[in-house]
Amino acid sequence: MQTDIKTLSFLRNRYWVLRHGKSIPNEKGLVVSSLENGTRSEYGLASEGVEQAQLAGKLFLKELKEKTIPLSNVRICYSPFARTSHTAEVVASVLNIPFEGPQCKVIEDLRERYFGPSFELLSHDKYPEIWAMDEKDPFTRPEGGESVDDVASRLASAMATMESEYQVCVILVVSHGDPLQILQTMLSAASEQTEPSSNDLGSRIQAVRLPSILSQHRQFALLTGELRVVL
Image (cartoon, rainbow, N blue to C red; front, side, top):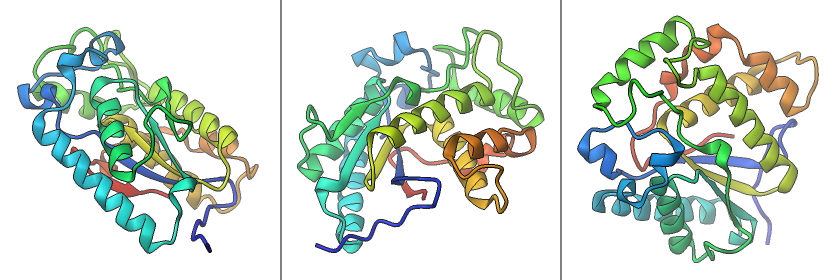
């Protein structure tokens, strides 16, 4: 079968991103960003989020068929949080891919951005405070938490992992709002470089980890359960 997988010169694979479906923390209006809390089952998907994940899986399958991409070429890489692992499992089920098989991989570096103890388990109405800080200086950390650049650093590591383990695949990255915004920001800027110092992914990402670029990550915001092709 002829496949339609087109990648940029510095990438071995093609990428889609999916923000997890609506979660119980979303419903409760809570910030749940630490690995310890995020992996607890009580902070998984809400029933609406399961439906969103099913719809995303069906849309992804439709796009794969339109591009004549066989399921054997698909990989699902996901955050270890309960809401993302459940989303990935639902999508894998829709695609009829074994979730415990080699096509699905949990990557800890895809986890949620940790917003720090001043925000953890408190109202998500506090998010605008963080995003205002990001826009002013994406290298500034919320107290005890991660800056945009901190997240960019581990996302670069996640990309390196995926690029080293897979070749000529379609990779669905199932993660969270801020990490996926930051990932899209970096990859978009990296793809627009006309004269990179090097054509490898690591050099390109390092070159775009600049305040003027990272501060704009909100431009790539995703709704819960939203699927988007990246590159």
